[in-house]
Image (cartoon, rainbow, N blue to C red; front, top):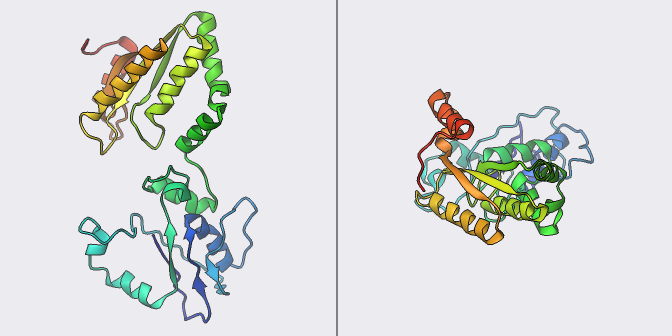
Length: 264
């Protein structure tokens, strides 16, 4: 994304360094105010030279990114004389705003949550999905106290363990690989019965994706000898944000009363 420094009057010798990321915004603001940034703020100021102003107005243009300039790059195709004028006359640079630079997996686009978090924190804050992936890589996932508490409790009581969440190759919260890891952990812990309640339909996925994910989960459950998919529901119903009670009620009746359409 572009980052432009606009000063009340031209500041000789002041520029913005290249190679920065959103984590450099907060340290830059503090530097402009003449304030030190705290040790926890590990990002570095983007300023080259002195430009203390005493007052700062930070404007965030959500979604204003730098693309490939092709026909799908709407900002590049638009008429933007104001921003073009700033870029032509003011110190500016490009900041990384996606992937590992904002705590997300490699190759993933940025979003408002990751963007605002890193602008404000001034340091790298790994997304939950990244932290879980790291825990899987080093094996600490299987020592998670909360998971072990739930699984060992179910085993002691001879009770059923229910796993509920979005089943998708990727969402901002996790991936289907995390569910498969929970099934593996349940096998290791000797949990007798494990039931999976799947929510499908991440934005942007193909209609057939849900069936592919469910097949993947069922295949792994069969291989492990643990787990069974017992309910499948679209996130349109289960994660409604628009106050439609009929959607939430349908989810409630499915999960609590087992009311739904039997398909096998």
